[in-house]
Length: 203
Image 1 (cartoon, rainbow, N blue to C red):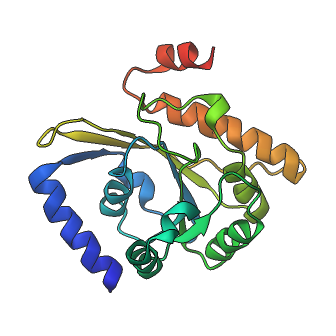
Image 2: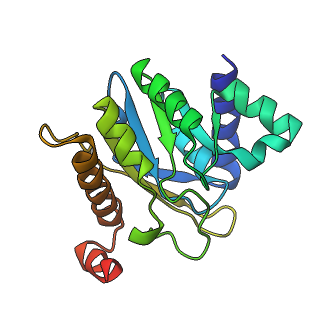
């Protein structure tokens, strides 16, 4: 109920101040668990994903935010939970697996931090935990990229791709590596510039 109320408020604010055009929304029409993986350019990424997906997203949020009492309360009400991206946060990974086993939607920013300089993720900035969670839980990843316009009243774009399914064969480690590579390629390919930009960014 609280989550739905927040989503309704965000929709109004987005319509007035920061309109978002969503491409590929049909790729979110899934039942059961999935991981929603998006690039992270600004604080507006989270509200835009909340607006785009009709289901509740359980976000992994940087543990540093939880030192603020109000933020800790708000994140808790929204179903988010903390993760320390600088360490191997075992508790966060366990919580993430619980979310997926409960057939909920898990929201992750594979870069682990906001990258203001460019919307394009770099391979060296991608954390490996996303692929591990997918492989460990046999859960598909829905890739998406957000193109933010710096000024208000400008149309922002959210591109949502087709789900990346977990390979049938291989160890958890092998699946993790393969999934992470597939996720990076999928995210880059979602930008309107197309495959040419993808090749340029990989080098």
